[in-house]
Image 1: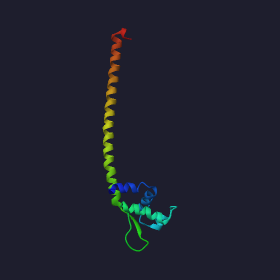
Image 2: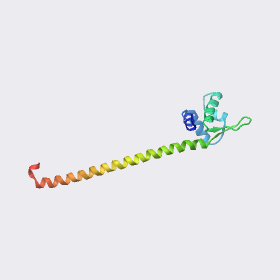
Image 3: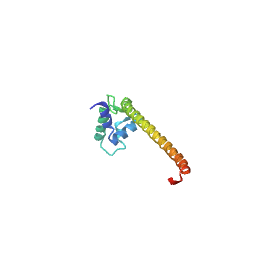
Length: 129
């Protein structure tokens, strides 16, 4: 699995997304990260392992307690991918908007031409009613 797939897979879980949001506020120990969740510390470590494997968080080697740190580079990779696809979608919408504007302009011009023909035709040909 490539890095981007690991990132998106890791973020598919709401608990891990919440951990990332909390780590965006600053580093935290595992016990501090575990506080709001109704799960064992072992389950929290499993979530952190998935986030670490995806490159989203890191924990420096050394004695406990070690802070868990958000790795912004992984978020940058995800952001680059999202922006590339957002740009493509926005270009398609701009093209669609241009087509719709052309259709509306053509429709308006046709309505105007029909209206103009209707007035001149009614005055010139009484049998056309």
